[in-house]
Length: 353
Ligand SMILES: *Cc1c(COP(=O)(O)O)cnc(C)c1O
Picture 1 (cartoon, rainbow, N blue to C red):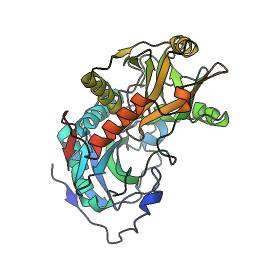
Picture 2: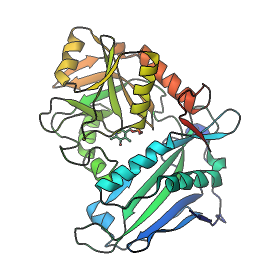
Picture 3: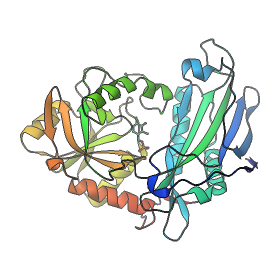
Picture 4: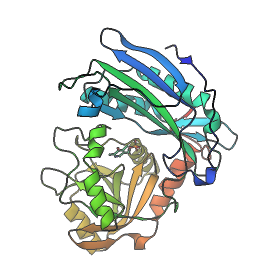
């Protein structure tokens, strides 16, 4: 794939690396590529970051035919930059696109686009501990037509955002509300995809949980509201009586790359781990009998997020004395150690830029 490059004439001032937050700042450039029926993907280009002109009738605005990905570039101590399992993101983008009737993009083209864009803006990859460059690829329908059918034209865009630790307080236990009114993903729906529509419909539950003092919701299955699925933008793990359990990928759960890496790491360490159906009752019982040892979420943004409190049906459960669990910390240290090049990478997960 040939990517043309137009450099900005107005480079931005760099934000203070100690106050990056998450998703507040964007770099100088973005990648764009068009799709038109009959022509396929064409005009791959890196251009100055800026607004995108769309017809008011562009289909993405009306029917949310849009998918996205999230990954990071990490700066190592020697100044070099790497990506973490980017092929997994490229494959998952195509899996999401297939479900949303968006045309396939060759995975090697997705990786090439990410690498060339990060190279152009490589000075934006922050250097302070715990910081990284968040990479957001997304694809959306642009055909000007308010009929409900797959669009005949699309834009594939990649933007970059220098980010700090996801939680300003650093690695600290979060409070999670077990959601028993709203559901996230239905059987046969789009729960396994990173489709924009999934997030729009989840905001209400998140807002109500915030009002009750919880930072995220834990979703239950939409059929019986009995089985645990995942958290807002994280997969979830429970350590019960020595066994680590995460819900099996049944089609309504997002197949997280941090989830997959965590499962592979636990197997490598010889720690019992299972992907299976897990009822909320089993967790409540474990909490009552003192066997609920640790709970943590996994996702690219926060990597590993310890859970210190769960609330279900009006009852509150404290986990690990509201401290970071021992295994949670070990997984966090190992994954972030591999990502920032501080620990060896026996799995071949790291791709140098
Ligand atoms: C992105 C996402 C995750 C985490 O996936 P990673 O690949 O680990 O970042 C989990 N759940 C949902 C709903 C997500 O959107």
